[in-house]
Length: 76
Image (cartoon, rainbow, N blue to C red; front, side, top):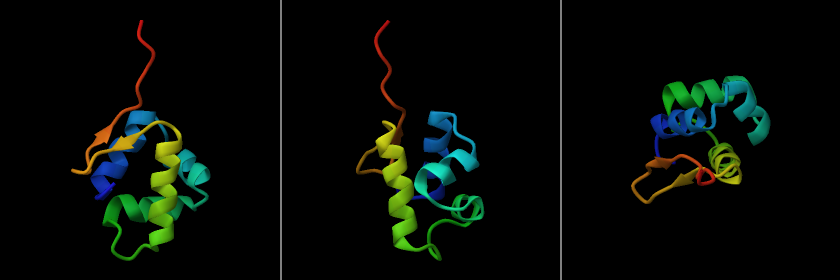
Protein backbone atom coordinates (compact mmCIF):
# COMPACT_ATOMS: atom_id res chain seq x y z
CA UNK A 1 0.00 0.00 0.00
CA UNK A 2 1.84 3.01 -1.28
CA UNK A 3 -0.80 5.72 -1.61
CA UNK A 4 -4.07 6.91 -0.12
CA UNK A 5 -5.77 5.80 -3.35
CA UNK A 6 -4.57 2.23 -2.75
CA UNK A 7 -5.98 2.43 0.74
CA UNK A 8 -9.38 3.59 -0.54
CA UNK A 9 -9.39 0.86 -3.21
CA UNK A 10 -8.59 -1.83 -0.66
CA UNK A 11 -11.35 -0.61 1.65
CA UNK A 12 -13.75 -0.60 -1.30
CA UNK A 13 -12.72 -4.13 -2.29
CA UNK A 14 -13.80 -5.30 1.16
CA UNK A 15 -16.91 -3.13 1.23
CA UNK A 16 -15.80 -1.58 4.51
CA UNK A 17 -16.84 1.85 5.77
CA UNK A 18 -14.05 3.89 7.34
CA UNK A 19 -15.34 2.93 10.78
CA UNK A 20 -14.80 -0.79 10.13
CA UNK A 21 -11.26 -0.24 8.91
CA UNK A 22 -10.53 1.92 11.95
CA UNK A 23 -11.84 -0.75 14.32
CA UNK A 24 -10.02 -3.58 12.56
CA UNK A 25 -6.73 -1.65 12.46
CA UNK A 26 -7.08 -0.36 16.03
CA UNK A 27 -7.09 3.27 14.93
CA UNK A 28 -9.52 6.15 15.17
CA UNK A 29 -11.89 7.13 12.36
CA UNK A 30 -10.29 10.61 12.16
CA UNK A 31 -6.90 8.95 11.56
CA UNK A 32 -8.35 6.84 8.74
CA UNK A 33 -9.96 9.93 7.22
CA UNK A 34 -6.66 11.86 7.38
CA UNK A 35 -4.80 8.99 5.77
CA UNK A 36 -7.31 8.72 2.93
CA UNK A 37 -7.47 12.47 2.31
CA UNK A 38 -3.88 13.57 2.85
CA UNK A 39 -1.73 10.49 2.38
CA UNK A 40 0.78 9.08 4.81
CA UNK A 41 3.36 11.88 5.16
CA UNK A 42 2.28 13.00 8.64
CA UNK A 43 1.06 9.60 9.83
CA UNK A 44 3.00 7.34 12.18
CA UNK A 45 4.54 4.38 10.32
CA UNK A 46 2.93 2.06 12.89
CA UNK A 47 -0.51 3.34 11.82
CA UNK A 48 0.21 2.64 8.15
CA UNK A 49 1.46 -0.83 9.12
CA UNK A 50 -1.71 -1.47 11.14
CA UNK A 51 -3.92 -0.58 8.17
CA UNK A 52 -1.92 -2.76 5.81
CA UNK A 53 -2.02 -5.67 8.28
CA UNK A 54 -5.81 -5.30 8.66
CA UNK A 55 -6.26 -5.50 4.89
CA UNK A 56 -3.89 -8.44 4.49
CA UNK A 57 -5.57 -10.32 7.34
CA UNK A 58 -8.80 -10.12 5.33
CA UNK A 59 -7.29 -11.27 2.03
CA UNK A 60 -6.31 -8.05 0.28
CA UNK A 61 -2.91 -8.28 -1.40
CA UNK A 62 -0.62 -5.52 -2.55
CA UNK A 63 1.83 -5.99 -5.41
CA UNK A 64 5.28 -4.43 -5.71
CA UNK A 65 3.65 -1.76 -7.86
CA UNK A 66 1.28 -0.94 -5.01
CA UNK A 67 -1.80 -2.22 -6.82
CA UNK A 68 -4.66 -3.57 -4.80
CA UNK A 69 -5.96 -7.01 -5.63
CA UNK A 70 -9.39 -7.84 -4.21
CA UNK A 71 -9.67 -10.95 -2.09
CA UNK A 72 -10.01 -14.16 -4.04
CA UNK A 73 -13.46 -15.70 -3.89
CA UNK A 74 -14.37 -19.36 -4.11
CA UNK A 75 -14.97 -20.66 -7.62
CA UNK A 76 -18.59 -21.18 -8.48
